[in-house]
Length: 158
Image (cartoon, rainbow, N blue to C red; front, side, top):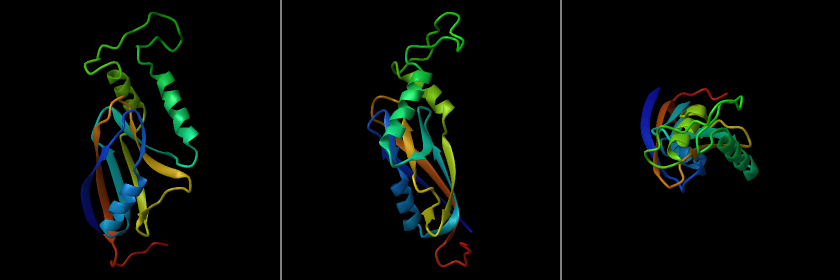
């Protein structure tokens, strides 16, 4: 068993989803990993990681629309609809700043995945996405930590 630690740098195009599955599988292949566990962690507080459908882009559009409705940019009211409108206190970097932090808190900043036969173990229609919650483009770092057996080691991949 070995541990391999690396970082994947992704340039986002602003708000939306970036499929990072092939880059991760390429990293697994280049490190000759046969079987193991991979922990992915995004090193930011205004984007997240998610696993979702890769076949119908409307799924990602619906997810984006839903999270925008759930976390409005202009502040919020109580879920009951009663009470006063509350403005966000934190808006240092623009109107999308605090909503991005809330969206990150409601989603995931890390994922744990299995590696089998030199590839991520994902369902037929699954992909790993970096979900950018800010409007402008950013360079994002994804920490990758594998605990694995490399090719050539005695491995049971049944």
